[in-house]
Image (cartoon, rainbow, N blue to C red; front, top):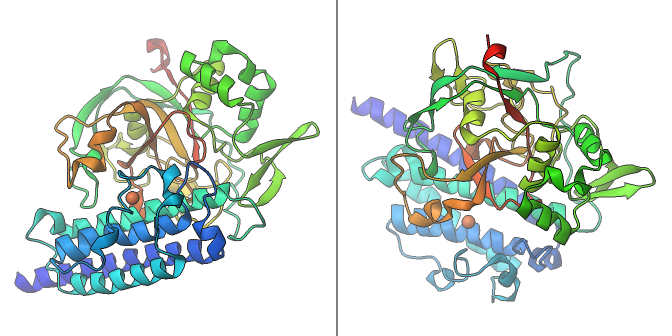
Length: 443
Ligand SMILES: [Fe+2]
């Protein structure tokens, strides 16, 4: 028994080391891609300077893994306050006496060396925070979430392209139905079993969902351009009041990063300007734009529960899967994740990731806005601290699901929840639509 436990802990330590290393390789690549001026500059009021993200990644790793889990002496307790996201809003961060790029790089390296030592000596159990490696998984997810934020900063940066990646796979010739009917009834939402699930994904609970229809694939640029061409941005009928006010104030006429070029549209993606590709999911639209499109199309956004049922429910067993394709970790066959490609794939490009009900590309490509506000599930308990999720609960935030091409697999699963303000467009967010199904349709 002890031998088995040792083998299990060894395996867990190996996988923790792999995900920590993968996150660090990405952080290094994102920060080495630009010069020091670019690292300390604020590319948008919405974002931190890249050098803040880098040292903040190291500081969170130090707080949780070096000091709390490891019980070790602080590496730099003098900088905790500077890198506390709650102390300083993003817009104010460039004015802080931040670590220089060289200091930040040295700091995250020093913290990581100590963490690898803590990891080598951890029993991966005992205290709840280290049970099945949770704290290590939480920190790997945190770093990857900041890597996605840094990728969004790269998208906001102006200048010549500095990032490169091969194009995503193309779809085969199979014609997909426009929508899929999801049967009404209960299903299990959230999780109590996933070892690295965050507090807001817990606990698993039964939710009843009425029969509904959901788009087989995310809304494409081509479909979105039909909304634009039909005057969708100029017709208050499609917008809710706050959305219409925001559309007027921000003068929204198209997704962010799109520009008119004669009678067509082009978009700029990581410094490359190109014609808008009709078959890619639309990205960089706010919740208000998604909501207006859906109303124009005679549809609506799916609720968060509907999205999760479409993604996880297996009608053959009545069980909810970890991912649409099953319980296996994502591979490049399943989904466009992890910044392997610098864009969403065309719709239909991931038949290997289809859900049991036939819904495509729920994981990866683009985050999907849902119609739901961010709330705790019944039985929610904050862990390991209130600021992780609980302070964000309420009607100001809308839930996004499924991850984007910029989300790493460690920070993405069928139960993973993201949230943001309904006006936000710099994130890699798109959407798909749903509708109620009449009783005589569902037969
Ligand atoms: Fe953070």
